[in-house]
Amino acid sequence: MDWTPSPSARRALTVLTLINLFNYLDRWMLPVLGETLRHSPLQISDTEFGVLSSGFIIVYMLAAPFFGTWGDTRSRPRLIALGIAIWSVATALGGLAWSFLSLLVARAIVGVGEAAYGTISPGLLADYYPRSHRARAFGIFYAVIPIGGALGYLVAGQMDVHFGWRSAFFVAGVPGILLALAALRMPDPPRGAQDAGESSIYARPQGGLAAYRALLSNRPYMLTVLGYAAYTFVMGGLVIFMPKFLMRVRGLPESAVALKFSGVLAVTGLVGTFVGGWLGDKLLARTRQAYLWLSGIATLLAVPCVTLALTSPSPAVFWTCNVFAITLMMLSTGPINTVIVNVVSPDMRATAMAGSIFAIHVLGDVPSPTIIGAWSDARSLQEAMLLMPVVVAISGIIWVYAAWQGQTDGRGRRRNVIRPAAYH
Image (cartoon, rainbow, N blue to C red):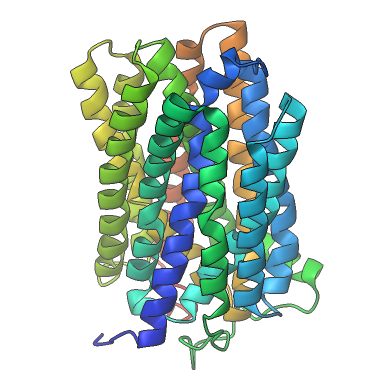
């Protein structure tokens, strides 16, 4: 399909992508500070560190359904700007923490702000780009996740080494104010602007609770989200505890972890996410379940890479396997989020993202840091981390099953029905 994005679509993609960059810079700076906080006057244990990370996610997922309903009925740029302002102020307040509890409260408030942005932005972006180009737009949008994460590692590590851990929170909170102003200037296109004339099979039920009940009966949506929850369990555990693993088990200094691992995250994550979005759109010509097949197979291929990275004492094997594992896992970021917005009607997209956020966090990175932290305190960190490849495999299996189900009648026979235009 020959289609060129409008100037407003390009501007919106640029602004939303920059916000996503700083969103993940804020999220991923905490893991690098873990060992410093452990030896600081706050004396945060591994279990408390897991709870600290989970606390943010709990508030994030609890706030998401409210912003999901508002995002389908109210001004989306205003809600996004409000969320950015809240998370920026709360991030800076983390630098004033005097105890574990005060730091937990500050990080929890960050979750309120990020819930507004996380639920609303994908649906807004979908109204700027048609289905034929949507996974590529989402690929660009999500490609900055590893870059933001890498910058979070790098900025937090360098600020901690040179100015103390509190300075990292102050620096990370500043850019949000400017981004909030930029968000206010974005136009809010009509919902479904790029889906004109498509089937209304997934029309939105009346009432917020009815919409969430409808999602529970949407089989493609539920399978996609369940696989995403397992994926998020792994990513949450790896992001939070990999720096500790590298420092404690592999013996690397903090500065080396912040620099080297952030570089690996930035390059492999960028390549994986961008290629995944582009490849997903290209493969649609071969199968309507291209996004799910790509995500499931790539995730299964990552299983041996994750296993070797966590068990081999060789630095060469560790870094090589990390490169392949992160690249393969990040291939699914754009395609999976595209599936989530494609299998519902345009006026349910914020609700669908909110439901996804709630599910992937309550089943994913809410329990995983706490489970790994408690397992580490009771046994060892290296043993706790071996849970990761098992859950990676579960994620890949669910997505492959969802792709197979989408192309067959559930008993291996290919469907002979015309797919509704609302689902790719």
